Structures are given as C-alpha cells and as structure tokens.
Length: 430
Image: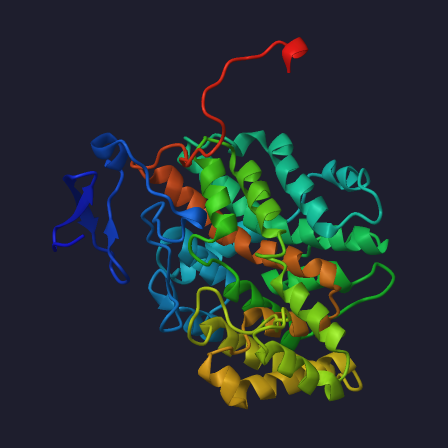
C-alpha cells in the first residue's frame, strides 16, 4: 500500500485504490469501507486492534510516547489543576466550562443525584452476597424503566438530560450497592458536598453519627475519577457504541458497558494486582517472585506493571503514584504487609534494569488498587469505582456516535470455517 492520497491493494491479480484519512495527531487510516464492494473480500482483524471503528474528537492516546489527551488537554493537567466535574463537562461539550457554565452544570448534576424512591426496593431483590458489579448492571439497566422522559435517542434535549442523570446517579447507585453488600442502611446524597465528597459520604457515613469527609481522600477520589474518565475505543466503550448503534436507550448502553468492564481482562486489573500482592505475602518473598517474573519459562507475571497500550510510562500512573503516597501518608497506615510488599515492588520496578529496559513500570491499576484499599474499599468495589468514573466517557462517546451521520448499526464480519453446505439426514440414517 502506498501513495499520499490513497492506498493501493493488490489482491487476486487486481489492483484497488482506497482513500486515506488523516487525523489531527496520530496515525492515518486506510478507508476500507468499500473493500467488500470492490473485491468481494473482508479484512481479518481479531480484536479490531488495527481497525478504526469511528471518527472521534474526544480522546487521543499515543502509547509509544505515553500521552493521553482529553479534547487536546493532557490528562496530567486535568488531574492536577481541574476537578472531575470540569472534566465531565469537557468530555461532553468539547471545551472547558467558564464560571457560569460550570455553576449551571454542577448544579444540574447535584440536583439529579437522588434515585427514584421505588428503586431502593430494587436492591432488595438481590441476594445479600451479590457482587456489587452484578447489582450495578441490573440497577443501571433498570433506570430506563423509571426515567421514560429521557430515552428518546433522537431528541437532543432528552440525550442531554439522560447524560446528566447518569453522571449524577451512578455514584448514588455505586454507594448503595456497597452499603447493600455490607448490610448497612443506604445514605442519601447531600447537595452541600462536592461530587467526590458526596460519594465518600454515601459510602462510609452511618445515620447514627455525624461524619466529616477527609479532604485529602476526597481529592484523591476526584483524581481517580478523572484518571479513569475515558480511554478511547477500549472494550467497554466499543460495547457502549455498538449497543448504541442499534438505537438502544443510553441507560441500557451504559449497563452493557458495565457488563463488559466487569471482565478481569478489562476493569478487574487493579483487583488482580492486589490479589498478586496477597499471593506474594511478605517483603522477604519478593526476590522469589521477581525471579519468576524474569523467567521466560515461568507463567507467573507481575500484574500492575506495564500496559497493553502504553509502551512508555502510563501518564495516569504518574498522577496516581503521587495520589497513592498522599493517601498512605494521610491514613498513617503501618504494619500492613500487603502495602509493604507494594512499596518494595514499586522501588524495584523503578530501579531494576530488567524492568526499566522492558518499560515494565507500575501502571495505574497498581497504584489505584493500593490507594482504594487504603481508603477502606473492599476489592469487590474496585471495578464499581472504575465504572462510576468511566460513565462520563461512555456517555460522551455514545453522544458522539448518535450525532455522527456516517455511523451505522454495528455489523462486524467473520471468516467462516465451519462445515460446507450439506443435506439434512433423517435420524434413522445418522
């Protein structure tokens, strides 16, 4: 394939031309939408890792350079200088809000945080030991049964209302899922608290005493939300877009995204990182496990180090590392073997030539798992918090997909390798 304006493909003795689209930054793409019509052939790309499924203005990742941009803004700047609500507005609208816009948006989110009271009963239909992510999938999907006035995807105003409702209500649902799992009463949202503080209050306060949210933990929670807000066309985002391409309502689409995120290869990595630390158990066993990780013939791998997309340092991990140490200092945690293992592993990964040369740096999952544990969340809630943060990204991507005139219902093709045509045989002759 060559040429600056088009690409040439030779197949079965014939040559074909295909257009090339240039992005603002990043690689160009070959437009193969007419491939089947021209050649009678499809491309074969398991996992779609070499296929652009859409045009998007929202998020850009350069894995080789360790860059993550939201609407052009580096993730480090958004996390260090802004807050999650500003980031939500940015992802949804394309620009950072001015003071008046932020006040209006923040007020709208705050006024949508309560759930329909009948939804409280919905939680009691789950077994007490239900995984919080199972509850999230069910309850978020059920929102469409309670908010009929914002399910028409062809109505821009209804899409706007649904978007704000989801961002506002997902922390309430997540906190209720947590409270239900530990047998404590639900705590209603408070309009006098910011987004992250309100969520922590709903998770950790109890009706029998007054609780004050620690501002250091609230800021850490806010950063975690920002760092997980969107990550381009990953599995769960692609799931939301694919579900949305059929015209499904936004609540159903986000529920589909949550279900996809639940998979251990996607949203469960921070929980898996903690499980690995627990397996190591103590600092004196680290050399044994580091040796196993270096051994090509040993299946053991250090989870939470390196990243499928980022071949350089994960830019989110830099912010998360700082936040992690701030939380550990604030909580004054001592004599925790798991955290001792984590800190020693971090030191080794940043200094050991093997890890440095292979760029196996601690990633965001490594630091977020440690941070959330220190804040008091059980591992079963880690992916729930990921889903909470990612909801705004899903909604922004869903809105963009709905408004894109070139988008059609998703219909991936296949390479059929089953039986050739054959005749039905009567059961007596089989």
